[in-house]
Image 1: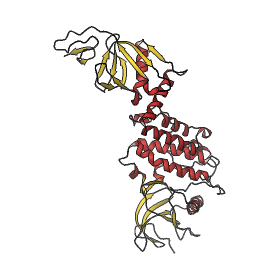
Image 2 (image 1 turned 90 degrees about the vertical axis):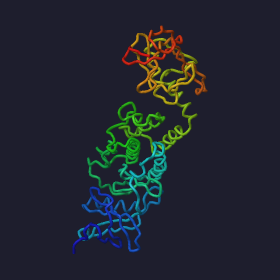
Image 3 (image 1 turned 180 degrees about the vertical axis):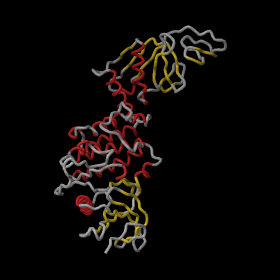
Image 4 (image 1 turned 90 degrees about the horizontal axis):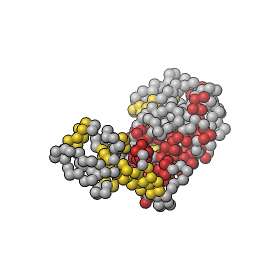
Length: 406
């Protein structure tokens, strides 16, 4: 007697294979239908050895025991004694890939779906169950909610340890470092936190291959390179902590949820965000304590402070004494001696001769704090057709550094 071939139209139990939804190293997932023409998803273990079958049985066991929102439920399973005659399989509801969830969503909308999924992970961890294979392809969209799937590497109390020494366990691009070196004895709960953090980074950047090592905000990995309009400090700190190479330094999933929710709420509440941003810029400029006021007169110091301010979108709007304003993108020395350029777009800058930059603090009401940049007088440019000189300002067009026309 030969095993039924895994192919379209083949029948496994009361289910007929319709379309292959996905393929892994040891198994395939198929869309199937029963005799009533209802649709389901079937996972079939095709490359069978002692370890792969034990892991498959462990997955069936834990899915049949769990009743946690955010974990795909097992509907039916088949675990044959003789795998040379029959393939093992189990059936679940049909869900959609994570790519469908990401499509056309803002960064905040994407993270909104990760908050309940983090609660699912917390429920698993409260039972001392670690997934150990968290990655975007193991997250599905079902009934407008994200769900964990593929528990083939799950670890739970009293489960037989079948991972050989020095065998890595997990997804290549989200795997915690200890899971590469000593997965058989590593803390799967802290490894889950690491993988969950990297999965969020992948979801927010669209970079499928992730990154190696710890997240560093001030690098090419920084989320600011992808989302310039978001307040990111708290999320940067969380991702850095959660991907620490030392598993003991990582937060628990409960602590992770608190910090992720705090970041999410700050982006949704301008007043709270603004106060937080003021405290953060004060800490950068005045690490020993914020004074009531401060003044900078050196042009390099002024440029340094302005560039720190420019990185914080909520603090970077400039108001002009003549009315109107611009968002400050950065500052640099101008071609002209003693002048600086305030960059207000990729192609435009305001040039001025700085006299001093002053900071005024209102203490515990930082939303009233401000910086005031005072311009020194300049001599007018003798250009035919140029706008009228106004003491500190004159409108001209710079065609090359230091060369102006009307």
